[in-house]
Image 1 (tube, rainbow, N blue to C red):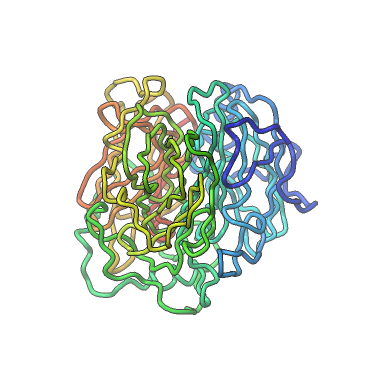
Image 2: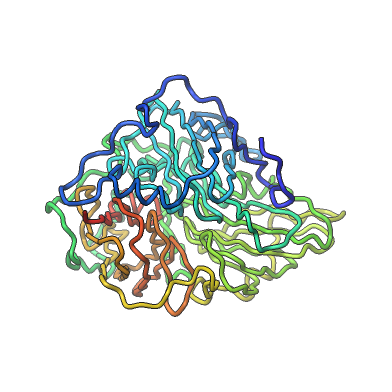
Length: 536
């Protein structure tokens, strides 16, 4: 195990690098290269996930020292703090075993699949080699039950990331964990670090599973209202004219279990910050680092300590508004990339988004509260630097209603600011669908892995997200970071409010086949996904 620096004193445990997190099964589905079976074949004329162009891009990252990690995906019992549930997880605790490497390292992580169905790992936010991206049916074969697979890639960019499956709605179980890539030339100065993972929880509660939730939602709310749905055009997409009608977009198995437990369909949740409808799922619990508000995690520090907090929203259907009682936060990064420092009282995180902040700890016990935006419940943890009683679960920091800093108000740090330039190609993506029919899609087309929006290496590409629905969508691009307009921050996940258009730009410098999708796991699995494909 590597000796932790003062920056590696973690709220979620010290990660293991160079050793095993959990015992992996002895069987392996890998070939001698360690990359497993060849990825699925796609249409001719596009770069293959394991093509020579992908290998060349990886070589430019100059993969460094190898950090070996073993991980097991397994059914387990999880203690959420006063409530124990049956779920699936990486090990036996939430929020999973953190993985921590240094920028330039080669991560060699072997996943042993002890689940009863195939799985995968997607490395959310990383610009990595395409055949390690973990999108089954697109960039890799699914990891079958009882098999194992080695993910091996250079972790080139420092930042706060996380990993989770990209198979069905598995992400809405306990299958997620932080991935922290440390900067060997870290410019920030701080005394302690606290990794804070936010989640909404339904699995194993009163008979519910994410699959039964998807089955209920997929029936829709009835009626004929399409919520202003604009079917749109193909926007230059190459496709075979297929319209996928099965419920799950990323698994061939039928996740159509008989409904069990109470209804989880949420009605009437609204938020002005989210432009109206706040979400689809009424979760029984909301968690910070795997704990409910009644039995929260306590993070201990000393008065005056400068603490770096890394926020990760690992939820399936919930935006969180977060604040630390009695403190202002200085935002330093979003989605792994530095920004010009900005002070705020609160932050809003859509699913998949991350923010890093610095706080100077005061003396006492303070609630770190994550309000499930529009859903009238909260998750929380405690920062303790002195004596006194912990705040009650119902405590609501006044900072939640103070200054809230949105991503669009941030500016990228000079070191990572995208150079100005006109786009060579614009890909228009109309966000379509409605709660009435639960027919979420992009440009009116439900996900088909054979579809491609073509780009070429070296192009400046603009993604134009045009939201014609009455729902907000956190849109995520694999394998790249894009820039918000006017020198805005570099991100890989951004909230697109209803009735609005968000234009983002990126440089096409990582060849392969990459997903673009809504990071509401139920919207994605209903069809709001597509593929960006590099032409040969």
